[in-house]
Amino acid sequence: MNFRAMLITVLVAGTSVVLANETPAPPQANPAQTGTKTHVINQRQKNQHARIKQGVKSGQLSKGEARKLHSEEKTIQTEKQMAKVDGKVTPAERAKIRKDQNKASKDIYRLKHNDKTQKNPQGDAK
Image 1 (cartoon, one colour):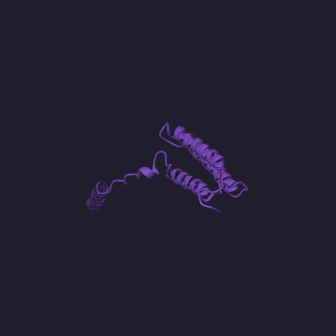
Image 2: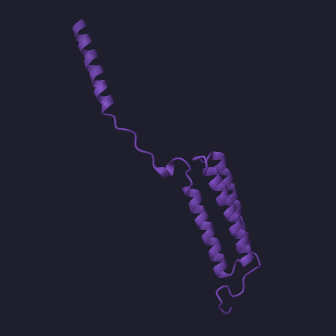
Image 3: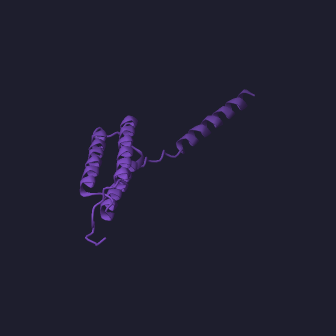
């Protein structure tokens, strides 16, 4: 009986070692999911820039309004770059950038829907 128990123990231990060696390596992390993780911030910046550009083209934004909005976007871009300097954007930094982007989005909407418009934005007769 003693021999049988020892044999089972050796087989179980040997099987464990073999299975441990066959465990696949963890998958390599996607660069977009590590470190600074600013792909969402980048996309939102592009979307807001397009909204400003469309507002100027349609005449909903005056040149001065667009200049103010672009300045606000540039400030957010600088804030993002400062957050990335150490190679990691912390949740607090991300929250601050998100808050600033929310404010910028509201400013874009507010300025596009106020009574100021650019006359003949494309030189077309209105």
